[in-house]
Image (cartoon, rainbow, N blue to C red; front, side, top):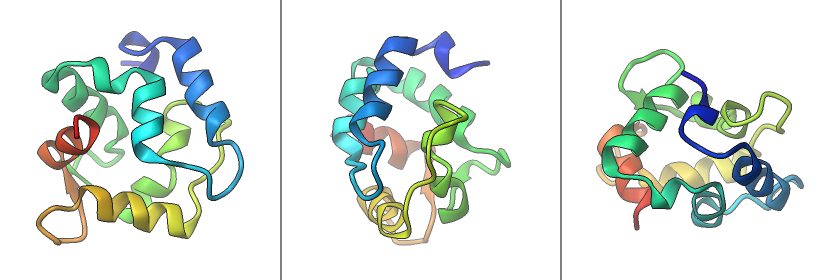
Length: 109
């Protein structure tokens, strides 16, 4: 599966353009521009599985650092503060990782 199987390449490019500079990544803005917010819960969970590199069922900070690169391989890495902010936005149970349900809730909140 490629991310462009479910999201428009133009929408992905626009979302990445908005956050190309360090410390400009805003999760909700990215989800909106990329089209993730328009997807069903099951489609968002499909995207989650694509982002989950080790297929553990969770995203940890190491995986989140490369979040943008899952949408476009040449995209930048998230900064440490962006990574921590993204984790805090979705880690509802405080276990230091984001599950598929938490990811879907964050995208649709």
